[in-house]
Image (cartoon, rainbow, N blue to C red; front, top):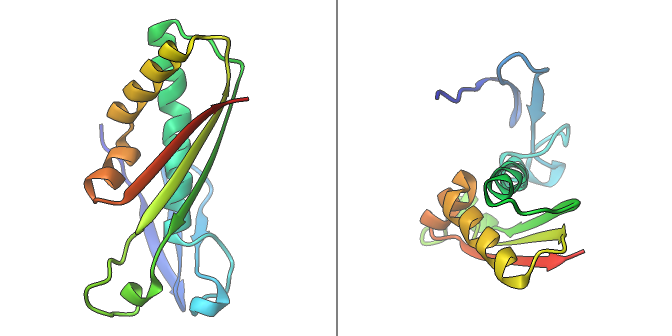
Length: 144
């Protein structure tokens, strides 16, 4: 499977990106970081990608496990040290840490919920990309 995106710089620190046949979207930075604040920045898209990836993997794996749920919500929050982005040596330019929360409504047992969580962590591509980059990941699953 090929995954592709095409982007064009427009001005300042802004790009317009196209993926498949979807409407183009803007990536930009807040004014404090030299942008025009006309769209999420790339790291915000990455955090949203983690939410979306879990939103694909949880239902997929739940179906494989005959695991039933009726509600699913996500919240992610990453911390970066902008000194690394500004060129200071020794400071990572990506997330130093990332908190990810899943809220799920289910009548399944705690053991089955833990099995789902473990399987999703093992198979979610974005989660594993971040983990292998040694981002300090804190994942919290809770019942709605």
